[in-house]
Image (cartoon, rainbow, N blue to C red; front, side, top):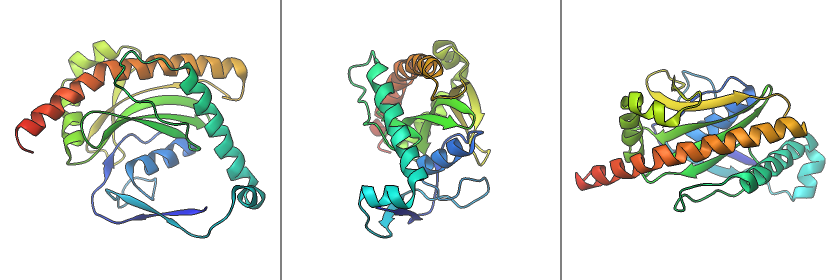
Length: 220
């Protein structure tokens, strides 16, 4: 089924715009935006509206490139999730997606980790995401303000980076690896990304849980 993304409420999500076109498109959808570029109107929620019904076989015939990319993404995430080992037993894993990203929900409502892959150039990464002006958004900004303590625990090349609108910070780590269809490159990407996702969960999930509980206790 073909889908059209339409904004239904004002507001926008918070995340980081990546350099590659694939990552930018992915990130725009993760934020709930139907336009990837800066300075465009964002929406807080989106609905996917069917344009016309079509079975997978027909879709593949009509747009084989789109179908191939979707299958490539699903295969990539299936393999990655098989490799990924999480220390936190309470952190759920997502299902493999036919998209350039997957998301891991965090305890503070409307917050999550976005894990992505870009193909031109080959890049993988993870960043903290949330909806603006929500418990998750407030928790995310509280963590950003405590960056001096958080950065040492995250290690690696994690850094603060401006959101697309350039008004808020988020936390991101990424690695350019080359062609993700090459077995050795793919193996390197999986190893790096698995360690980074596990570390982000270990460091950020307890903080988000504590901040969410504090937010709730104050009746907000």
